[in-house]
Length: 53
Ligand SMILES: [Zn+2]
Image (cartoon, rainbow, N blue to C red; front, side, top):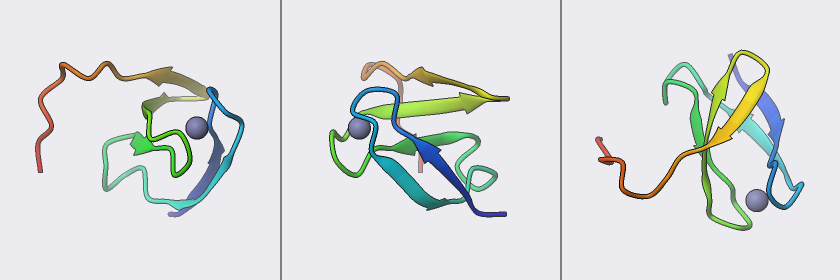
């Protein structure tokens, strides 16, 4: 299911996120920060995390 989320950093709405596919994470299209959605909360993911593909 695709959802829309608002970036908590810059407020840009991110359309059509597939959070199941990415296990809740998304990268803002504007500020390029990495966030993870847990229930209704959005937390920033720090860069030292391993990026797995
Ligand atoms: Zn942003």
